[in-house]
Amino acid sequence: MAIQDIFFYLFAALTLLCAFLVVANPFTRNPVTSAMFLVLSIISMAGLFVLLHAFFLAAVQVLVYAGAVMVLFLFVIMLLDLKEETARTFKTFGVVTGILSVGALAAIAFRAIATSGVGTGLQPQAEGSTRLLGRLLFKDYLLPFEIVSVLLLVAMVGAILLSKKDIK
Amino acid sequence: MHLTPVGLEHFLIVSAALFCLGAFGVIMRRNLIVMYMSLELMLNAANLALVAFSRFNNNLNGQVMVFFIITVAAAEVAVGLALIVALYRKRQTAHVEDLASMKL
Image (cartoon, rainbow over all chains, first blue to last red; front, side, top):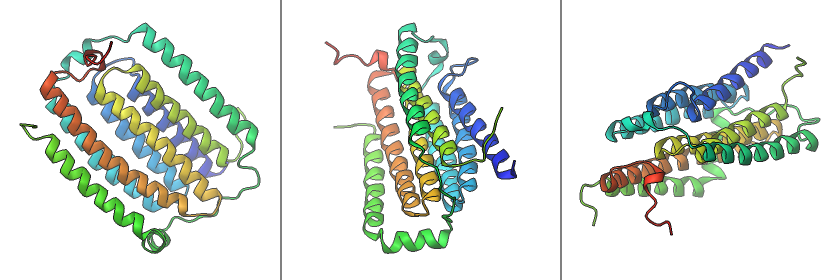
């Protein structure tokens, strides 16, 4: 087994384990723990991106998600008083419906992947180097790129407006 | 355990499992912030599938798509968390069970 395969199984297991601990940690209900496991899950997913030769996206993933988004989450958790969350238990009805519906979803997805033969005969080729990606981004996708920058501005104004003390 | 060389299917299976975990979190957890984190997991699952498709089909458009998804997700998190804070200020709660005033 090649070293890449070993790393794939390592990172995939780490990603899924940490994702499970985000949504259903058996030891604690604390949102801060969930946030920390989300960071771990996202960093191991950046490892998977590196295995797919998407180096730029791996760096962006760590910077944006593990950096900016998680800081935002932790700030909001600090801002809100979520102590009582640890005292709450899961509703049995919610757990059962969750397992049933998600189990059906998982069955459909896995069956579709297994039977479609989607990866047969495909060799990993594409290199996600920053140069190629940047060229594509600033040539073919220039208009979406600019629109997304406007979207970020809108989101910033909206977030500031919503967090103001006196919303009209 | 028989381990075949890693191909597109392996990445897609990880992506599907991650998406299901995120959906499970959204359905099961009742805390708005943890539900939001589960939403992020689902977005990341889609990102992983797109990057895998991009690599195995020798087409970089998938990675550009992921770039845009990450940007939109960051904007969405900023606005969503601001909404949660505003809601908490008005109602002193971040639990969906306590936010049922529109229920019949």
